Picture 1 (cartoon, rainbow, N blue to C red):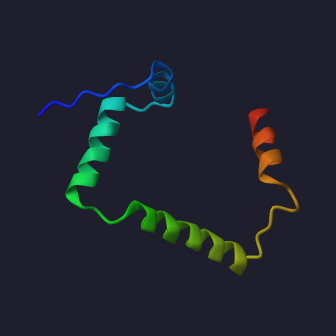
Picture 2 (spheres, rainbow, N blue to C red; picture 1 turned 135 degrees about the vertical axis):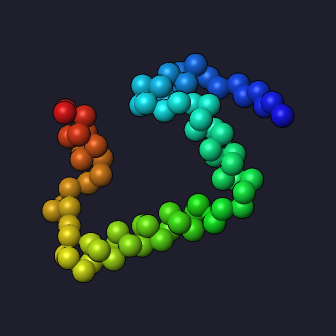
Length: 77
């Protein structure tokens, strides 16, 4: 079977800049969906819960910094 996708040029360029091979990535996503792998949202939820639990156990804080300011700071580098 052959599937044709129309992907905007800018998205394809972004994927390529980040080192993704677009066709391989899309194939893998389709394979995961068709193979009935566990729910990705469930996996994400577990990962976030684990990170929050880690932060609570180790008293990790952002020292009052907001996400927006951290992203802005990260752009400097």
